[in-house]
Amino acid sequence: GDDLTESVRARYADLAPDALLAWFRGARVAMIETLCDLDPSTRVPWYGPDMSVGSSLTARIMETWAHGQDVADTLGVTRTATRRLRHVAHLGVRARPYAYAVRGRQVPPAPVLVELVSPEGERWDWVAGAGEGTGAGPVDRVSGNALDFCLVVTQRRNVADTGLEVRGRAADDWMAIAQAFAGPPGPGRPPRARHDA
Image (cartoon, rainbow, N blue to C red):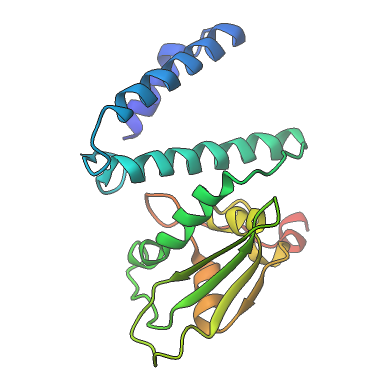
C-alpha cells in the first residue's frame, strides 16, 4: 500500500538522476523476469483486489502510461501515441464495472459499444458490460480515437475536452466516472473551460 510507496521513495530519493534511472531500469527487468516465470493466472496482491499476473502486467502498463502523461503534461510536451495504447483501452473497458462498484452503484444493464481508432488507423472494438439487453446489440456508444479514450479512462482528461463521441445514457454515465485504476473513486477532471477559469 502507501507504506511501500513511501519506503521506496525514501530509499531512492537521494540518488542522482542517472543512478535513479539505472535503478528503475534494473527493477523493471527484474519485475518482468519474475512475472514471466509465473503462470499468467496466478493471483498477486495489489492496492485494490488481488489480480492475475496477466491483469497485473496490463495494469502496470496503464499506470506507467498514465503517470508518464502526467509528466508530459507538466513539461508541456506531446508524446507519440502507439498501438500499445490497446492495453490501456482494454483495461479501461474491462474496468467499467469497477468504476461503479467503488461508488456503490450498480452498472446500468445497457451494454456500451466502444469503437476506437488506433494511432496507426486500425479499428478496435469492445462491448463493455454486455448486460441483459434486448438482444439487438448495444445502442449506447463511445467512439473516437484511442488516445482520447485512454486519457478519459485514466482520468487525465475530461471527456468534454476530447473528440470522443458519446451516445446514450449508459455511455454518458460511464464516461463521467470511468476509472481504469484500482483504489477509491478518482475525482475526475473538470472540463478545461472550468478548470482554467
